[in-house]
Image 1 (cartoon, rainbow over the protein chains, first blue to last red):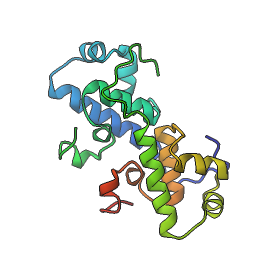
Image 2: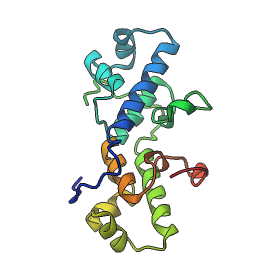
Image 3: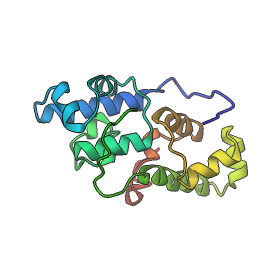
Image 4: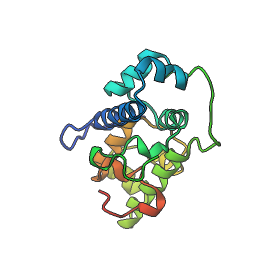
Length: 90
Length: 90
């Protein structure tokens, strides 16, 4: 990735990964599962899952697909806006 | 990113980046702009833009946000499914 100029339209950068984190957390809490158990079920380290839920991991599109696949939901269910979560997602 | 086990539910991996590429192409063609001009307008190298349109770049969520910001559309307009493109996106 090699953008030459830094153009931002209001600093929403990182909002997508925070949104993915909030939605992942919703998926986990729907089954009342702890982060430890959920990470183990999906085959990820607990710290990795915690980072994603807190929105501090700038994951790639393929990692998003893999995460959704392991969680048994559609990839598009993770970056869905908060107010649309649960409407026909996964 | 450090998944320990490779679990895939049918090999759709990479579909999200291909979808982003198709949608970016749609955005570009809506203004009848060539890849060269569009890349220049957004401040990216032509090869980078071509890779993204062809869906061969596994970009990160922040790169997706930056790309959408430069293209003047909402980040969520890029990974939207083909049949939903244009419905209240951007």
